[in-house]
Image 1 (cartoon, one colour):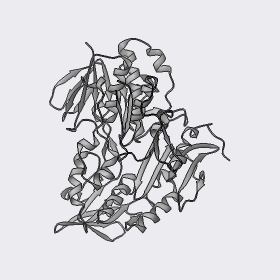
Image 2 (cartoon, each protein chain N blue to C red):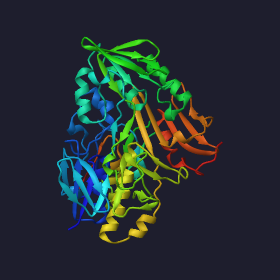
Image 3 (tube, chains in turn orange, yellow):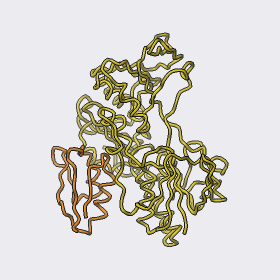
Image 4 (cartoon, each protein chain N blue to C red):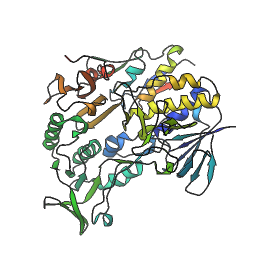
Length: 65
Length: 405
């Protein structure tokens, strides 16, 4: 099963800690809102997106696959 | 079969267990924690969880597949340790042996010794149970007195006033959150909090507490009295490290450890033991030659990963010297939500010179970023709002990272 990143936008508070962990996958836009750039990132980014999920202060990120 | 015993069952314990597994340690991990809950996220306890209905489902950390076989002994506590004999004793009297020990017992809410204080109900906000007990009392019109004007105190004050409570914050400090924010930022936050209806009684302490019907009179040391229906104490923390007494460790402020998070006895690291989370006082050369204990949310993950790698390498028998020698220089970060304002910080602003606090972007009465300098080094930044911009300073904090303009 392919790696899939799901952000619960009802929970996300735009802290942006995930951007430090996986800048290829997450970004804060000009308004400071979180944007997921790649919803199904390459397997090589698994460690980075798991790190992103760990450092999310509100646990908004889940990893499937 | 070897055993890693983790004393304490909070976030740092979980991150350590995950890191042990990530390093390839596949034997037993036993976690002993005095709360009845698995690891959960504490910051919402003074913020959104307190405003709503705090539940474990909402706060619990997701458990990874790698840690499914961890043995969680919840509702039990470690009361002593013999580091030379490699055992711990539980409150029940049971003695557990270990091949590696992780101290992850964290901090408790500090309770002030106040005459009359033992006979009245005083709340703290540290655990889920604390929040569950406090939440139903925060009703419209309830007179809530908060002792302490630090981050937790101010967050609880903001939450309570938004729930319709009549909130008074009593603190010895001259301004709220002055450590580590500094007087100018603190004065601005005081202004914003007063504007939203919180009353501050600063520079005073409570001399006596006395029951007055169903409420409590708090007599202050300036002779005045404040009446409370609910008292919340938020005056800092006490390290839960008494169980490590008798092993020669420096327990004067948490547990003094080396860069590999191993506790020190007469300057030498204790083998097979690591300290994580709020109680680890570790060297961080990014910010200077001292060792610091940091209670911010980011540290359980940083120290848990470090300890898991160090002990994993020690027990698996591969790469130990390399792991121990690898640099460990985490950048502390914290945030605080109070009304519609988010404060966010990176680094160690408390290390700034008294005259080293400067607005880097924006205006202090609006949204801004404040820099905390020691000499020409940016030791920390705090953003009031401007989240994306403050994030761009994260890698610039620390000695020699950026020149003052």
